[in-house]
Image (cartoon, rainbow, N blue to C red):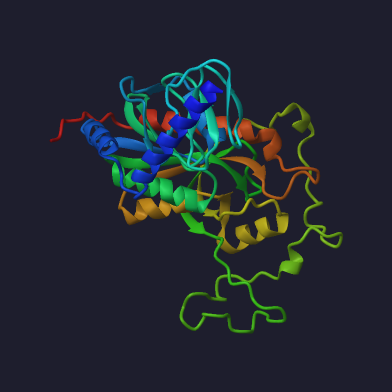
Length: 359
């Protein structure tokens, strides 16, 4: 009971600190650390979508964290019970029991997160910016989280807070080009946001003016979808006419993967697992790569006049191949590793920047 009261007191004190600093302003300590590290720049900004793609990079021998300041946590990354050890178990609502002697971190949602002394894990609300080197290039790495909003917010913070010379975004993606294979790594020249649609009222068709079309917000000139053709009911045979290679059960590929520059990629906060929609994106926009973040990263970099390259390894033929499950379930880890390998190789080919100290 005594341990519980001590823990509860610390939680209350921590929540009090959260309330005092809940004005959204970056703390002076974080700003001081960023200013100090920016003197070592400029850096390459590395943007990963999620842990599935981030972890292979962090585990790579090519990546070396900066020893004295390996990361900076922005916003509500590490709040609350830091470096607290006591016997027995301590329970935070929604978190389960945490063993004594562990660190307990309190996120904004009130969930406990189990970590290790001096390290810890950021909460799901966190933006963690990691400092290090890849092939003698100084880098700042951030994980965005899934979708366009997360990618845009994380990239804007990256380019606004840190002194950068360019941005590299990498990860896995769906494929809309049947001439390419799973495992191939693509570098699209152009990106488009393909998720902004005007959903017409029932009964309207292509000849009916869209709402807000007169003001220029929407147009029928680019594309029109009749959604009854893009479902998975028994009268739709578009998803049934493709099969994976025979060696799919051993997770092999028909040929060694390759790196290729393609014309276009499209992004939206939608996981595309529909062959008919994939065909539409390919035929209408000449898209090869289909993902959920890259167009947002590209938009922020373009607005900031910052060079950027997107590297996306193909994990599946979107909506095709298997009528049982998406190929990403089998080849996702292989594609993620391919994207990391190409990223590391690309960084190693860049000229080394000799930094000068700035006041």
